[in-house]
Length: 105
Image (cartoon, rainbow, N blue to C red; front, side):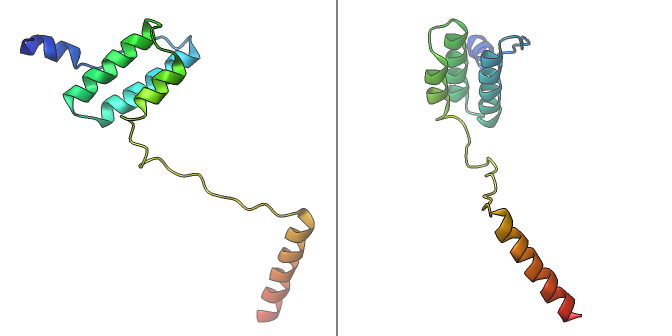
């Protein structure tokens, strides 16, 4: 393999078709993983994986299982955890807070 052939294979695949939602979502995951990994061998593996998905050689769940090893999941924002209260308990706690703040003044 010469340098020109390696250069061509390591370029990101560009797809502008958003009519197939599943494929477009997979492409977005691929492009994020491709941008986050500067290593050429990883980029070649990602390109091969995307080509196999495009050619229906691999299913979507298998695609995501394989691409997970290249995705940077530590930087994803965790969703906040909300603890739900019953309406009566919430009203009671709010009344207590207002009562305390009224008497502090």
